[in-house]
Length: 190
Image (cartoon, rainbow, N blue to C red; front, side):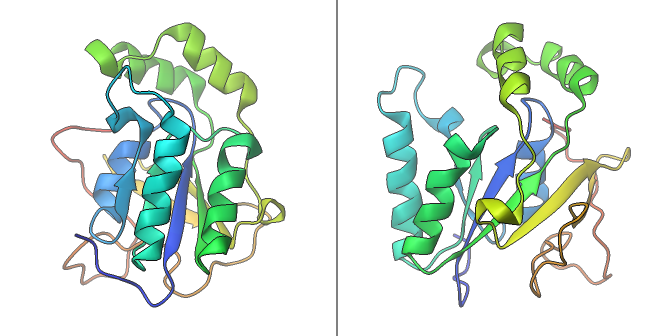
């Protein structure tokens, strides 16, 4: 269970399918944030949005930070998450995964079963994808890119101010070096 923070945060991961969002969560946020993802609900589950929001509210009510790992391509998806953060006095941080359509399609094609997203769904998300900004209500917008070594680089998104202290996630538990790179996991980028 992630530790409670003085002010909880809602981390909203924004990017295409197979952009590396789930791997980023496991490498950089899992030790501090609870995970909420519609992908974890049963395939036929009803009211996924309502269920997601209830889980986010539950974590925030308990003072725990929460990460929402979905595509969250537009204000229609991230707006309610920012509003929920505000309702609980929490901060909201967008983790923006700039689109690499060819790379995401390649990684998606290598997926098996339920993890593979139909190409039509991928292109529908690509058509709606928009870069978040502080004007959308986020306290910080961080750009996340794969570093080519199985990890990620994280920096303030272009044109955005520096995040508050502690806003860029460390490498993980036990980190000694002040760096923002991580190593490949056995599962690889997702």
